[in-house]
Image 1 (tube, rainbow over the protein chains, first blue to last red):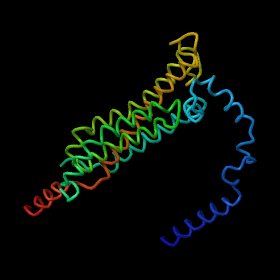
Image 2: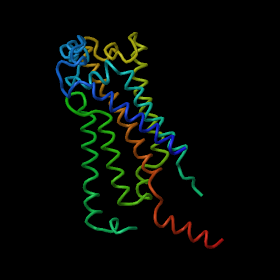
Image 3: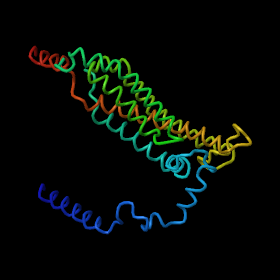
Length: 91
Length: 157
């Protein structure tokens, strides 16, 4: 069973490394993520639309607010799960 | 109590540092709308302050500051603050989390949006700090005297 687990780990890790070769270089301005037209909209309109100067916060709390609510719910659920599974009972 | 916990220097430095760590955490949370920062980072810093205090002063002291019940209430109320902010936008006729529609300042939706983003960041921070502290209390090893108590109980049986 341990050998199977090792095989799966090596396979998944190898796939990740193989796929990582095709990622654009760090900070590459020609990469698809920077070419999408929505980027320009965020940079020019985020302050007037959301009222915050920080574009990251504008994205996180305004444009992607629903996603952030999901993230907070994930953290909350993780905390509740640890309470259920690991909390030492008072004797 | 281990050697580190008995050291006067460490106990004093921690006692002085914790309030500043907490003020810095509040600054990071409130600074999220105008610079680097935000609820996640600030919540982690605030939680780290209480974890530092608990590591030096022991579980009993730490739980007096942050009881299990309190961390449970805080962790759920942070999510509730976030969700209720979103629902309040629905009530005033906008989309979920469309902050501008809430008529706090009718002529300036961007300022309302900024205020509500701060509220949301505070909610995120409350959840993150409560979950961090509750995780720390649950996974950290039991106290020394607690272990000795168990050992003596078992020896008695």
